[in-house]
Image (cartoon, rainbow, N blue to C red):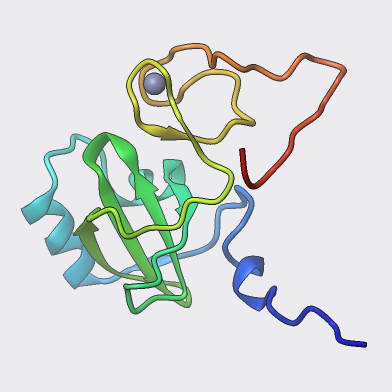
Length: 133
Ligand SMILES: [Zn+2]
């Protein structure tokens, strides 16, 4: 028998609970230098989608699709902000049929363009399947 031991990465990485993160000065500078956004890095983090960035040196990461910004976190500190180069794992996320940005299928509306998701889950009959199409 063996126990699945590979969930340790997931625990801090899933869900929408707002983790208390610290934003490093470097990350703040990168955000301002690299991203054209009228929101703060903190807001982008809060709205961002949890993704896995195996190429980045991080414990968790979030993608902010409107800027294609990859927000890199080590433990509880945002260490840097990168342009998403596509080397991400985005389990459970789908592309909005309207704007093409990644969204969480649990959301009814696209948080980025406001479009109603094509495959909206019918209220009362929650049949969300995660992973694989
Ligand atoms: Zn959209």
